[in-house]
Length: 286
Length: 223
Image (cartoon, rainbow over all chains, first blue to last red; front, top):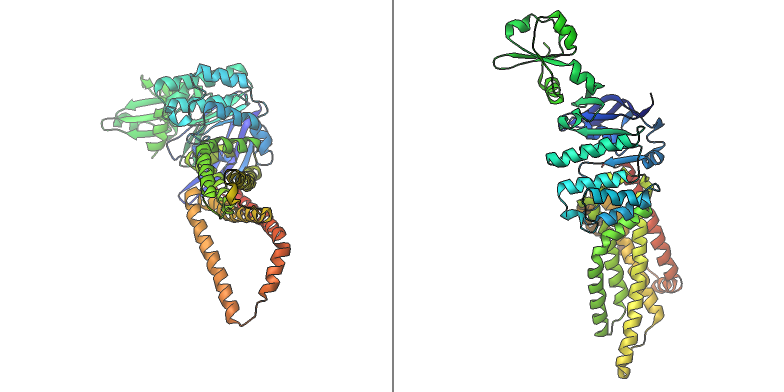
């Protein structure tokens, strides 16, 4: 399988934070969700892929070195950054005028259709747009040159549930239109990614905790809620992490079918990504 | 790079009114004064400073990261700013000269009893001086902005100018103290013969050095 993006041992050091040997891939045709709490290293990882910040390690995009072939690679990239875009004193028409000079593959008709679909006025200044409208404009300007890969940093941040749902629908359609397209999307709103991403990469304190297919996580992982007495019967190798709550123990297990066979617990809850993430952040092993 | 220049020009389009008011008041000032040579200097400076305000637009919208995600090299990003700066300087010079010629012609047509004779050579020198002045400001300010940001960069520029001025005064003082005699006539002759070429050469040198410094800073900068 070809990879749209491949990171191998990517490191970046700041005085108070470090990206620690980050490795994962974005397979061609797949949507990969990058999750983690604020400050976990999601944006730093994305900036490293885009060569906005220098980093150590190996990064390949479309099988090419991301620094050596930077300009060529970026022609086929669509990027949405959480808090950075063109000046808010421009309007959607001005954005088109700029972007079509930058991307030879820019499709004016497609952009106009997006503006129409998203109900974005062409002549209104961006500064007068709502957060949702601003994000939709970023998406429209990202999709209009038909990139092979979308890199989206917190694209649903600050949006209401309806606008968020609209965004996710757009990303789904983008992949459906051409199955060789890929998306790397970061978000701390994990529920957004549960139904969208094919793979989940979880970053915690600059380290990749896991990189797994979403279906694996949601179907094979389980949460056992039990008493202290029952918990003490469990072998350490049979669970990933546990959390001691006020009246019970919550235990995250990796293979619920094997676990269910081995132990006699009848109720194993299906975890959400958020719950799994919480286990990795707050859970204990010993 | 065309897209970046377009971006800056679109951002600057909000300055149309400011520019119109400047030209209008300069015209009025020109009509009411005998010192007609100031217009190129004033207009050059204003247009040159307006061109630098594109950095403020980028900073307030945090555009730098987004621009770096586009298929553009860092060299192109820095170069686009210098192209805009150079064009603004040339435009300022041309507009200032043209305004002086038009206003003086109108003034002479309205008041034939008080004809103002326009010395084209002196107008050219003044225009060049204006261009030199704004080149000096831009050449210091652009690298300062790349280093410290649009707001801090402006303060740092004044600090640098102040240090430069102190250095020149200090050198002058040392020169006088050392008792060396200066052949002022020779210097005057030199400037009369080669002043124009010297100013043009200095403008080119300043932009070139400034561009290289800015690129060096931007290449290493982490946004």
